[in-house]
Image (cartoon, rainbow, N blue to C red):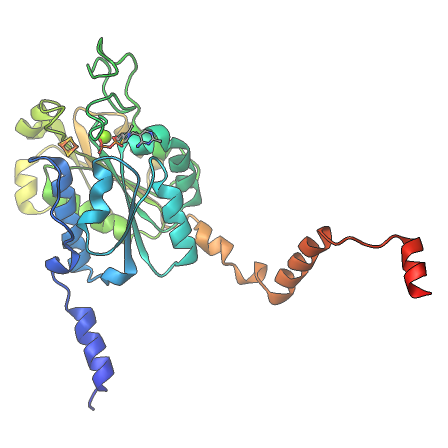
Length: 329
Ligand SMILES: Cc1ncc(C[n+]2csc(CCOP(=O)(O)OP(=O)(O)O)c2C)c(N)n1
Ligand code: SF4
Ligand SMILES: [Mg+2]
């Protein structure tokens, strides 16, 4: 049986995506910036999943990490500081057919955008969120962020940061309706890719914290972890991160962790040495806000008409009884 030309062309078009189809403008991040590794993994993922660029959107706030949508040849929205998530949620509500990704920094997400972050977890919409956590405000040149370690000297904390760092993993794992939490590090590309792939396939709000190096302002921060593989704890499980033989050979410090175990996930998340890498928590059964909103039982024509009538009635000016009698006479 021959295929109609139109279907044949559509099929060719759909099957034929290459890395260049996702590569936008040339990144202006510093040499060695961990954002470059995240971008490379995401472009590979888009190519491997054969995502249609016109059906894919990257949304960001403000910061170095937030330049991400410029470097993808898809739709993108470089938003305002801290507001990537509500913009992404609006897009997903209006167009549930789109693949929506969010790129945000530790300042963007955990400081000015913290309220949106908490509610996005609870809404559990089908979005993939990457927290590029470099523990500093990079774009504005080295102010402490909520994830900066205690004692870090920066332009806003010249005597050292006073407070213990906020842990984005334990925060996320503590919110009602949490459905996917993972951690990656930019210097293990295989794990970044596999974790992002699992996050993309998870139906719901997938939160991936990626420890991202900022060689410009914090060149020493993760050096000990880079040079000693024992300081990384690979979380492995048949429902979690699948590790190649090569990776397993280097990172021998491994632990089997069932991602359905929320309490254990919280314990693992609290430790940074060794630093857990893998899928901490996954629950596919949490309801999704966009589906609850689209529930056909709540959107019948009758219900919508009755609601609209009631709203219009609020603004109706009824003539008083005397006026009505005079008008009738
Ligand atoms: C409302 C508002 N407040 C402050 C700023 C200044 N500002 C721009 S980026 C940024 C911090 C970005 O840090 P982070 O989110 O960690 O991203 P990074 O640059 O480290 O990737 C700040 C404070 C702004 N653009 N808008
Ligand atoms: S300042 Fe830091 S985070 Fe920003 S581009 Fe340079 S290395 Fe990356
Ligand atoms: Mg930052």
